Length: 345
Image 1 (cartoon, rainbow, N blue to C red):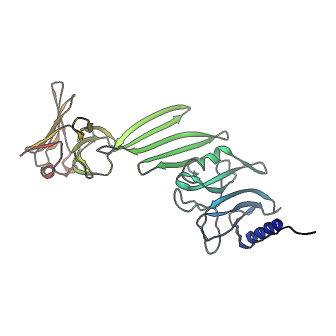
Image 2: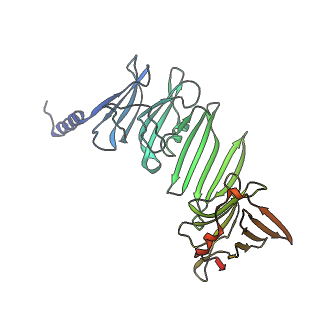
Image 3: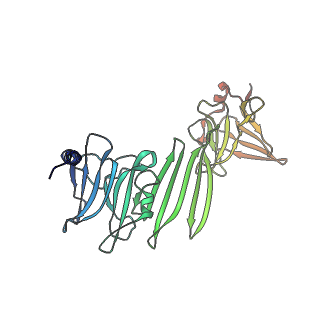
Protein backbone atom coordinates (compact mmCIF):
# COMPACT_ATOMS: atom_id res chain seq x y z
CA UNK A 1 0.00 0.00 0.00
CA UNK A 2 1.37 3.40 -0.99
CA UNK A 3 1.52 6.06 1.74
CA UNK A 4 0.20 9.45 0.64
CA UNK A 5 2.05 12.72 1.45
CA UNK A 6 -0.90 13.84 3.65
CA UNK A 7 -0.68 10.73 5.83
CA UNK A 8 3.08 11.20 6.13
CA UNK A 9 2.57 14.80 7.21
CA UNK A 10 0.03 13.80 9.87
CA UNK A 11 2.32 11.09 11.18
CA UNK A 12 5.20 13.55 11.31
CA UNK A 13 3.11 16.09 13.28
CA UNK A 14 1.92 13.39 15.67
CA UNK A 15 5.46 12.16 16.27
CA UNK A 16 6.68 15.73 16.75
CA UNK A 17 4.06 16.39 19.43
CA UNK A 18 4.87 13.12 21.18
CA UNK A 19 8.54 13.97 21.16
CA UNK A 20 8.07 17.50 22.48
CA UNK A 21 5.28 16.87 25.00
CA UNK A 22 6.29 16.62 28.64
CA UNK A 23 4.42 14.76 31.36
CA UNK A 24 4.47 15.28 35.12
CA UNK A 25 2.87 12.95 37.61
CA UNK A 26 1.05 14.80 40.40
CA UNK A 27 1.05 12.67 43.54
CA UNK A 28 1.09 12.87 47.31
CA UNK A 29 -2.33 14.51 47.79
CA UNK A 30 -4.30 11.25 48.19
CA UNK A 31 -3.73 7.54 48.83
CA UNK A 32 -6.47 6.72 46.31
CA UNK A 33 -5.82 9.07 43.40
CA UNK A 34 -3.00 10.66 41.43
CA UNK A 35 -2.85 13.22 38.67
CA UNK A 36 -1.01 13.69 35.41
CA UNK A 37 -0.35 16.84 33.41
CA UNK A 38 0.93 16.66 29.85
CA UNK A 39 2.06 19.87 28.10
CA UNK A 40 3.83 20.65 24.84
CA UNK A 41 6.41 22.95 26.40
CA UNK A 42 7.31 24.19 29.88
CA UNK A 43 9.11 27.32 28.70
CA UNK A 44 5.96 29.38 28.18
CA UNK A 45 3.96 30.87 31.03
CA UNK A 46 0.73 29.61 29.47
CA UNK A 47 1.04 26.01 28.34
CA UNK A 48 -1.23 23.97 26.06
CA UNK A 49 -1.97 20.62 27.64
CA UNK A 50 -4.23 18.26 29.58
CA UNK A 51 -4.78 17.61 33.28
CA UNK A 52 -6.05 14.17 34.30
CA UNK A 53 -6.95 12.36 37.51
CA UNK A 54 -6.62 8.57 37.85
CA UNK A 55 -7.69 5.91 40.33
CA UNK A 56 -4.50 4.39 41.81
CA UNK A 57 -5.96 0.91 42.15
CA UNK A 58 -7.56 0.54 38.70
CA UNK A 59 -5.42 3.09 36.75
CA UNK A 60 -8.75 4.28 35.29
CA UNK A 61 -9.05 7.94 34.27
CA UNK A 62 -11.74 9.66 36.34
CA UNK A 63 -11.79 13.17 34.85
CA UNK A 64 -9.74 15.57 32.76
CA UNK A 65 -9.52 19.12 31.43
CA UNK A 66 -7.80 20.39 28.29
CA UNK A 67 -6.62 23.95 27.78
CA UNK A 68 -4.26 26.12 25.76
CA UNK A 69 -3.45 28.11 28.91
CA UNK A 70 -2.42 25.94 31.82
CA UNK A 71 -0.08 27.49 34.38
CA UNK A 72 2.01 25.81 37.06
CA UNK A 73 5.31 26.13 38.91
CA UNK A 74 7.81 23.35 39.43
CA UNK A 75 8.86 22.56 43.00
CA UNK A 76 12.14 20.63 42.92
CA UNK A 77 11.14 19.43 39.47
CA UNK A 78 7.68 18.31 40.55
CA UNK A 79 4.16 19.66 40.06
CA UNK A 80 2.35 19.97 43.38
CA UNK A 81 -1.37 19.75 44.14
CA UNK A 82 -3.38 21.77 46.68
CA UNK A 83 -1.42 25.03 46.53
CA UNK A 84 -3.96 27.84 46.97
CA UNK A 85 -2.51 31.34 47.29
CA UNK A 86 -5.73 33.29 46.72
CA UNK A 87 -6.47 35.48 44.98
CA UNK A 88 -3.36 36.30 42.92
CA UNK A 89 -0.71 33.81 43.96
CA UNK A 90 0.04 30.28 42.81
CA UNK A 91 -2.94 27.97 42.36
CA UNK A 92 -2.37 24.28 41.60
CA UNK A 93 -3.62 22.41 38.55
CA UNK A 94 -5.37 20.01 40.92
CA UNK A 95 -7.07 20.96 44.19
CA UNK A 96 -8.40 18.07 46.26
CA UNK A 97 -10.55 19.32 49.13
CA UNK A 98 -14.04 19.04 50.59
CA UNK A 99 -15.91 21.84 48.81
CA UNK A 100 -19.47 21.08 49.96
CA UNK A 101 -18.69 20.20 53.60
CA UNK A 102 -20.09 16.65 53.45
CA UNK A 103 -16.91 15.12 54.85
CA UNK A 104 -15.69 13.74 51.48
CA UNK A 105 -13.06 15.47 49.38
CA UNK A 106 -13.85 16.77 45.89
CA UNK A 107 -11.77 17.78 42.86
CA UNK A 108 -11.02 21.07 41.09
CA UNK A 109 -9.02 20.88 37.84
CA UNK A 110 -7.63 23.98 36.14
CA UNK A 111 -9.16 24.54 32.71
CA UNK A 112 -7.32 27.70 31.68
CA UNK A 113 -7.37 31.39 32.51
CA UNK A 114 -11.06 32.27 32.32
CA UNK A 115 -11.55 34.09 35.63
CA UNK A 116 -11.14 37.83 36.22
CA UNK A 117 -8.15 39.58 34.66
CA UNK A 118 -7.12 36.42 32.81
CA UNK A 119 -6.70 34.50 36.05
CA UNK A 120 -6.86 30.73 36.62
CA UNK A 121 -10.23 29.01 36.36
CA UNK A 122 -11.37 25.52 37.34
CA UNK A 123 -13.87 22.77 36.65
CA UNK A 124 -15.37 21.19 39.78
CA UNK A 125 -16.29 17.56 40.40
CA UNK A 126 -18.09 16.68 43.66
CA UNK A 127 -17.77 13.27 45.29
CA UNK A 128 -20.94 11.27 44.77
CA UNK A 129 -21.34 7.65 45.78
CA UNK A 130 -18.25 5.73 44.68
CA UNK A 131 -17.30 8.35 42.07
CA UNK A 132 -17.44 12.02 41.16
CA UNK A 133 -20.02 14.17 39.35
CA UNK A 134 -19.32 17.44 37.56
CA UNK A 135 -21.05 20.44 39.22
CA UNK A 136 -22.08 23.39 37.08
CA UNK A 137 -22.98 25.50 40.13
CA UNK A 138 -19.65 25.05 41.93
CA UNK A 139 -17.78 25.48 38.63
CA UNK A 140 -19.36 28.91 38.16
CA UNK A 141 -17.79 30.01 41.46
CA UNK A 142 -14.40 29.07 39.99
CA UNK A 143 -15.03 30.85 36.67
CA UNK A 144 -16.90 34.10 37.34
CA UNK A 145 -14.69 35.58 40.07
CA UNK A 146 -10.93 35.92 40.62
CA UNK A 147 -9.33 32.50 40.61
CA UNK A 148 -10.41 29.51 42.68
CA UNK A 149 -12.84 30.14 45.53
CA UNK A 150 -11.58 29.92 49.11
CA UNK A 151 -12.89 27.07 51.26
CA UNK A 152 -13.47 28.33 54.80
CA UNK A 153 -13.69 25.06 56.72
CA UNK A 154 -14.06 26.82 60.06
CA UNK A 155 -17.24 28.70 59.11
CA UNK A 156 -18.35 26.13 56.50
CA UNK A 157 -18.61 28.74 53.75
CA UNK A 158 -17.10 29.37 50.32
CA UNK A 159 -15.63 32.81 49.67
CA UNK A 160 -15.07 34.58 46.35
CA UNK A 161 -13.56 37.89 45.26
CA UNK A 162 -13.77 39.84 42.03
CA UNK A 163 -12.77 43.36 41.01
CA UNK A 164 -12.79 45.96 38.27
CA UNK A 165 -9.86 48.33 38.03
CA UNK A 166 -8.33 49.79 41.17
CA UNK A 167 -11.48 51.02 42.80
CA UNK A 168 -14.23 48.38 42.77
CA UNK A 169 -14.13 45.09 44.66
CA UNK A 170 -16.77 42.51 45.48
CA UNK A 171 -16.54 39.85 48.20
CA UNK A 172 -19.16 37.10 48.41
CA UNK A 173 -19.83 34.24 50.83
CA UNK A 174 -21.83 31.12 50.06
CA UNK A 175 -23.12 28.25 52.16
CA UNK A 176 -24.18 24.76 51.09
CA UNK A 177 -27.73 23.89 52.05
CA UNK A 178 -29.21 20.52 51.09
CA UNK A 179 -26.47 20.20 48.49
CA UNK A 180 -27.30 23.57 46.92
CA UNK A 181 -25.30 26.80 47.01
CA UNK A 182 -26.98 29.68 48.83
CA UNK A 183 -25.66 33.25 48.95
CA UNK A 184 -24.97 34.47 52.49
CA UNK A 185 -23.57 37.92 51.76
CA UNK A 186 -22.25 40.17 49.01
CA UNK A 187 -20.07 43.15 49.93
CA UNK A 188 -19.03 45.74 47.37
CA UNK A 189 -16.54 48.54 47.93
CA UNK A 190 -15.72 51.41 45.59
CA UNK A 191 -14.16 54.86 45.67
CA UNK A 192 -16.23 57.90 44.74
CA UNK A 193 -14.89 59.77 41.72
CA UNK A 194 -15.06 63.24 43.25
CA UNK A 195 -13.52 64.78 46.35
CA UNK A 196 -13.26 63.68 49.08
CA UNK A 197 -13.04 60.25 47.39
CA UNK A 198 -14.88 58.34 50.10
CA UNK A 199 -14.82 54.57 50.10
CA UNK A 200 -18.41 53.41 49.73
CA UNK A 201 -19.24 49.96 51.11
CA UNK A 202 -22.56 48.27 50.44
CA UNK A 203 -23.50 44.94 51.94
CA UNK A 204 -26.31 42.54 51.20
CA UNK A 205 -26.97 39.70 53.61
CA UNK A 206 -29.57 36.95 53.59
CA UNK A 207 -30.85 35.60 56.90
CA UNK A 208 -33.58 32.95 56.78
CA UNK A 209 -34.32 34.00 53.22
CA UNK A 210 -34.74 37.68 54.15
CA UNK A 211 -32.48 40.21 52.48
CA UNK A 212 -30.93 43.08 54.43
CA UNK A 213 -28.91 45.95 52.91
CA UNK A 214 -26.52 48.49 54.40
CA UNK A 215 -24.54 51.30 52.80
CA UNK A 216 -21.66 53.05 54.57
CA UNK A 217 -18.94 55.52 53.66
CA UNK A 218 -15.39 55.73 55.02
CA UNK A 219 -12.55 58.25 54.74
CA UNK A 220 -9.94 56.76 52.43
CA UNK A 221 -6.40 57.84 51.61
CA UNK A 222 -6.87 61.29 53.16
CA UNK A 223 -4.59 63.54 55.21
CA UNK A 224 -6.06 64.09 58.69
CA UNK A 225 -5.34 67.63 59.90
CA UNK A 226 -7.20 67.70 63.21
CA UNK A 227 -9.25 65.07 65.02
CA UNK A 228 -10.61 64.15 68.45
CA UNK A 229 -13.14 61.87 70.09
CA UNK A 230 -16.38 63.19 71.60
CA UNK A 231 -16.75 62.42 75.30
CA UNK A 232 -20.48 61.81 75.23
CA UNK A 233 -20.80 59.17 72.53
CA UNK A 234 -17.31 58.11 71.42
CA UNK A 235 -17.78 59.42 67.90
CA UNK A 236 -14.85 61.06 66.15
CA UNK A 237 -14.56 64.55 64.69
CA UNK A 238 -12.17 64.73 61.74
CA UNK A 239 -10.92 67.65 59.64
CA UNK A 240 -9.10 66.35 56.59
CA UNK A 241 -8.03 66.97 53.01
CA UNK A 242 -7.90 64.58 50.10
CA UNK A 243 -4.50 63.91 48.57
CA UNK A 244 -3.77 66.84 46.22
CA UNK A 245 -7.31 68.02 46.87
CA UNK A 246 -8.80 71.49 46.53
CA UNK A 247 -11.10 71.50 49.57
CA UNK A 248 -11.14 71.18 53.35
CA UNK A 249 -13.60 68.65 54.79
CA UNK A 250 -15.30 67.91 58.11
CA UNK A 251 -16.61 64.48 59.07
CA UNK A 252 -18.33 62.99 62.09
CA UNK A 253 -17.51 59.28 62.21
CA UNK A 254 -19.12 56.42 64.09
CA UNK A 255 -17.04 54.15 66.33
CA UNK A 256 -16.60 51.70 63.42
CA UNK A 257 -15.12 54.49 61.30
CA UNK A 258 -18.15 54.93 59.06
CA UNK A 259 -19.22 58.49 58.29
CA UNK A 260 -22.38 59.78 59.95
CA UNK A 261 -22.15 63.30 58.54
CA UNK A 262 -19.74 65.19 56.32
CA UNK A 263 -19.34 68.68 54.91
CA UNK A 264 -19.12 70.05 52.26
CA UNK A 265 -20.53 68.19 49.28
CA UNK A 266 -18.47 69.00 46.22
CA UNK A 267 -20.38 69.59 42.99
CA UNK A 268 -19.44 70.69 39.49
CA UNK A 269 -20.68 74.14 38.53
CA UNK A 270 -21.56 74.20 34.83
CA UNK A 271 -21.55 77.98 34.76
CA UNK A 272 -18.03 78.43 36.13
CA UNK A 273 -16.91 75.01 34.90
CA UNK A 274 -15.21 74.13 38.17
CA UNK A 275 -15.83 72.15 41.34
CA UNK A 276 -17.37 74.10 44.19
CA UNK A 277 -17.95 73.27 47.86
CA UNK A 278 -19.53 74.96 50.86
CA UNK A 279 -17.46 77.59 52.64
CA UNK A 280 -15.66 77.15 55.97
CA UNK A 281 -14.16 80.00 58.02
CA UNK A 282 -11.17 79.86 60.35
CA UNK A 283 -11.04 82.64 62.96
CA UNK A 284 -9.59 82.93 66.49
CA UNK A 285 -9.08 79.20 67.03
CA UNK A 286 -12.50 78.28 65.67
CA UNK A 287 -13.63 76.72 62.41
CA UNK A 288 -17.22 77.49 61.44
CA UNK A 289 -19.58 76.46 58.65
CA UNK A 290 -23.30 75.99 58.14
CA UNK A 291 -25.73 74.12 55.97
CA UNK A 292 -29.53 74.20 55.62
CA UNK A 293 -30.03 72.38 58.92
CA UNK A 294 -27.52 73.84 61.38
CA UNK A 295 -24.48 75.99 62.10
CA UNK A 296 -21.32 74.30 63.34
CA UNK A 297 -18.30 75.52 65.28
CA UNK A 298 -15.25 73.38 65.96
CA UNK A 299 -13.23 74.98 68.72
CA UNK A 300 -9.85 74.56 70.36
CA UNK A 301 -9.49 76.91 73.32
CA UNK A 302 -6.30 75.42 74.69
CA UNK A 303 -5.70 73.43 77.89
CA UNK A 304 -7.59 70.47 76.40
CA UNK A 305 -10.81 72.42 75.87
CA UNK A 306 -11.97 71.18 72.49
CA UNK A 307 -15.31 70.26 71.02
CA UNK A 308 -18.15 71.10 68.65
CA UNK A 309 -20.95 73.61 69.14
CA UNK A 310 -24.08 73.19 67.04
CA UNK A 311 -27.02 75.57 66.63
CA UNK A 312 -30.13 73.94 65.18
CA UNK A 313 -33.75 75.16 65.27
CA UNK A 314 -32.74 77.91 67.70
CA UNK A 315 -31.25 75.46 70.19
CA UNK A 316 -27.57 75.29 71.24
CA UNK A 317 -25.76 72.02 71.70
CA UNK A 318 -22.20 71.54 72.97
CA UNK A 319 -20.29 68.28 72.38
CA UNK A 320 -17.05 68.28 74.34
CA UNK A 321 -14.01 66.39 73.14
CA UNK A 322 -11.64 64.09 75.03
CA UNK A 323 -8.38 66.02 75.46
CA UNK A 324 -6.18 62.93 75.28
CA UNK A 325 -7.68 61.94 71.92
CA UNK A 326 -6.53 65.04 70.02
CA UNK A 327 -4.39 64.60 66.92
CA UNK A 328 -3.08 67.68 65.14
CA UNK A 329 -4.45 71.16 65.83
CA UNK A 330 -6.45 73.91 64.20
CA UNK A 331 -3.29 75.98 63.72
CA UNK A 332 -2.33 73.63 60.90
CA UNK A 333 -5.20 75.11 58.90
CA UNK A 334 -3.61 78.57 58.82
CA UNK A 335 -1.17 77.56 56.13
CA UNK A 336 -3.75 75.79 53.98
CA UNK A 337 -4.78 77.13 50.61
CA UNK A 338 -8.21 75.62 49.95
CA UNK A 339 -10.95 76.89 47.68
CA UNK A 340 -13.59 76.70 50.43
CA UNK A 341 -11.48 77.93 53.37
CA UNK A 342 -11.70 81.58 54.45
CA UNK A 343 -9.24 82.77 57.10
CA UNK A 344 -9.74 85.73 59.42
CA UNK A 345 -6.66 85.79 61.64
